[in-house]
Length: 191
Image (cartoon, rainbow, N blue to C red; front, side):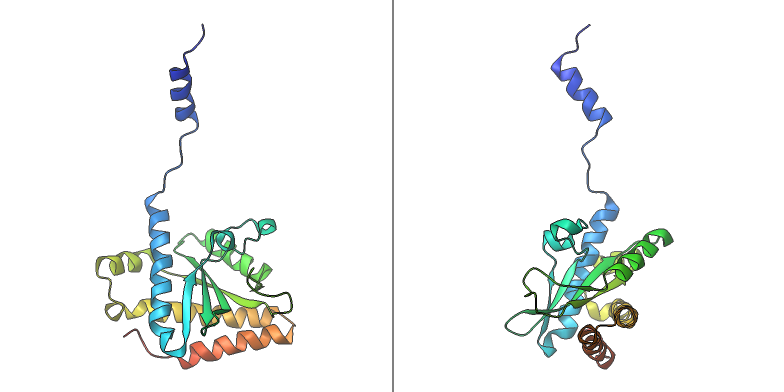
């Protein structure tokens, strides 16, 4: 008995459903926007901005240029990249360990816009509590959520100390130290 094209289509959709964005993925994308906004709010007076990663940079496919990052800090009018950020709201310890492993494997990255002679820039991981992101989305004022900035800053400092110890390259160490100075001297909360 031959099946009609319609029944095959329905059977295929039942067998291979079209992936849909789950609530967790939507919250993760929101967390990325919150971190970028918070970094911009706190670092703008220093001439530093944060941009979202390109789709290539965000990709985990290394041979296609993927860096597994979500945001890039840029400095000055020439928009020179100075640090990359991977953002997660994962609460599962195995996922968190995977992020640490990825950081250990690639603690410094060179983005496409960088020249081959440019020193790679440090990569950091920021992990936020999904509940804090949801609370922020319900009342989106950084002043009312100072723990978000404190957590971002704390995770960046911890990651920078980690990557500083992962490299023997003095230029990479200098890059990490510059970022450490920036975040340890920046003690303000969002305005």
